[in-house]
Amino acid sequence: MTAIPSTSALLAGGCHDAALLNDWHVVAVSADIVAGQLYPLTLLERDLVAWRDESGVAHVWEDLCIHRGSRLSLGQIHNDKVVCPYHGWNYDRTAQCVLIPAAPSETPPKKARAITHQTRERYGLVWASLGTPEHDIPAYPEWDDPSYKKVICGPYTFRSGYRAVENFFDPTHFPFVHPGVNGILDQPDPIPPYDVQEGPEGLATSEVRVTQPYGDPRNIPVIAYYAYKCLRPLVSYFKKRVVIADPASPLQGSPDDRFCTFFTAQMVSPTESIVRIVCAMNFDPEPTDAEVRARQDLVYAQDSGIVDTQRPERIPVDLRLDFHHRTDLLSVKYRAWMRDLGVTYGTADV
Ligand code: FES
Ligand SMILES: [Fe+2]
Image (cartoon, rainbow, N blue to C red; front, side):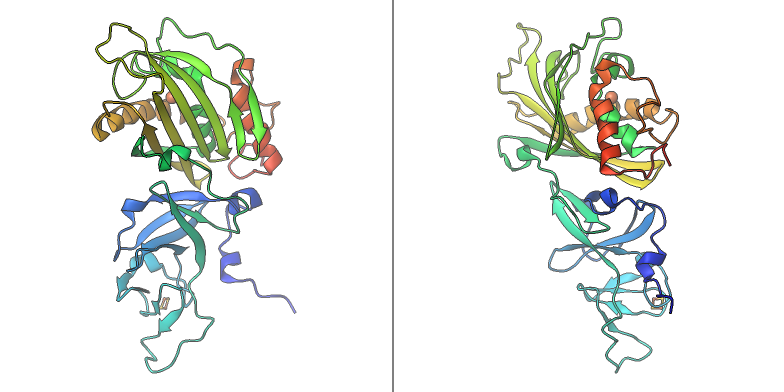
């Protein structure tokens, strides 16, 4: 007899890469998941719904009622239960259907359950996995360090999530895409050779030095030394050591000054992604949230203006495609690493 596929298997169009299905993905900012409201979202072409129960725990479920397949996100939350918009079935926070209004005196079958996904909150972000996570959510050490001010910025929309990641850790575009901000158009910094190490945390570079007219929210010229990490296919990070360029500047800074960015991309589909970043800085005096966001909004708008025009839209992980230079070392290692991880979804090689 042919096995009957489960509902979730029937819905499993889109991504089939274990490396992505069994990974954590950012799907929302925690502050956006408000008790009493259903929050529809899409991850890897799967329609999901997030909600927060009265105890404060966030949930991410398939946006689908197991009764007749309607969208739970069109329903409502009533008495801490998700109520389907079609026949009003009630699902409690464990995803169990606890009330079928057409048969109110009957206990719903045990199997009548919404389809849940593992959900966590970390760094002010909501993370979900469509499979069984093989890694913890990547570390962001500055998040727990009280000497750092943190600001969540975005969301910024990009087409390819991988191209957005690759752009995030590419310092050679600064003078051209961010002139007067991250680089100087007529004096691009030469990029000396740097190292890339691969380890359990992914890829990590040695420091890369660049001159930045408006390199951090203080809006003064700095010399910046970037150390990048590519933590997962759609999660990256840098820690940048910043030295105020003008010794006569009224702002003197400190040798310990750092500006960090934890970068996440939610792949909605191969050609639609949502970037959210968490900035952390230990400057004194602290910039305001508005100063931090203003600079990031400018930079990411400049980035998407170029990145969204790249072709092919789906990134090639076969290194014979595209032309690579030694200054693209991290990008080359990223593509090879993705290929080794078995990532094919949204790449040019499928
Ligand atoms: S489809 Fe949800 S209650 Fe019928
Ligand atoms: Fe950029």
